[in-house]
Image (cartoon, rainbow, N blue to C red; front, side):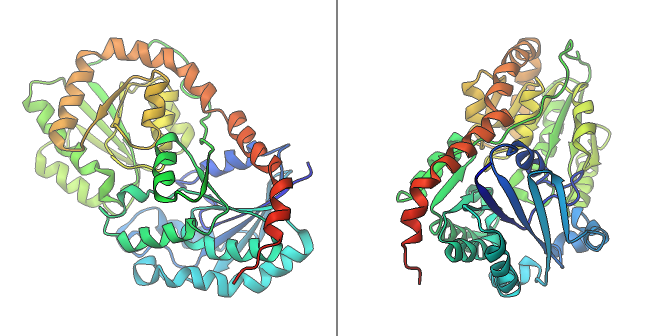
Length: 411
């Protein structure tokens, strides 16, 4: 293969069925024939405090953490090294944790670098991993690539303006910033005008075998989302359901798939709104189970206005579903350019979401045909082969870069 790639991340999907970063396994598999890959998986000893106390994915963390082997090889060309790290919940010390990772792992990592050597260092989910990855790149004198997985656009809304500023500082230390969609590329080029930004879209597996789309009633919508961020606007979607009813709309059924500490609050809200008979919360479900469920769904609704990419939106479009989604949220403009059946939301107000549901119901047959026609173009554009090809091009460019970078003096 020739090239060796070191990936450092604190989101390696050790529980692939439930992890929001499960896409990383397909990403690693796609690099077969492109590079030999070593993943340093940074495992937090304490998960996020809100989910730990109030419910959500992280409640499973302790049971998973201590069953893991220190090393695994999910694919012949990939070796994963799991490293447990003493951390604080981010709410108590998000600035401290990256230093803790660096302090605990620097000596061990220096030994690994001397033994193996790498041609580039890549970061996925940059908060905790970037300082350690920057250390590795400097030790080796090789490029540092940062794949920008964070949703910068919503951080001010979530009260995370300081974290957003810190993340932009980390991106400023990269040799190449990797974006995942055109909207994100434009944003990063504006925020980091001096940096090289390379577009490497995520990909999607083939899903939902072609068949005659289901016909209502009821109109069955699905929203797949993390339930630990208000900026996902799931609450606005819930409030839109009684507006659809009051507007003389169709019999409506909404399934919400996802987990997080806001789940209990959202359940209470549906009872308060008097629509708990129309809304079902099913928690986090495995990708195969989700694909089976999509066969009986009419419309996917993703009300978030800010996404770094929006993989669940892409998965719904690749399955041939009409979409209601934020007009500028991550991959949505790319899908519109490919002819996907998208009713864009200019805001996430409950009134606009309700109006969009009513409009899609009126045009459902037309939008179903459009969605199925666009499915092939979407799957071709967002294929893992194309994804791997973009990384192959990045690696092929290294021969000219390494000599330049190895001559730098770092302070």
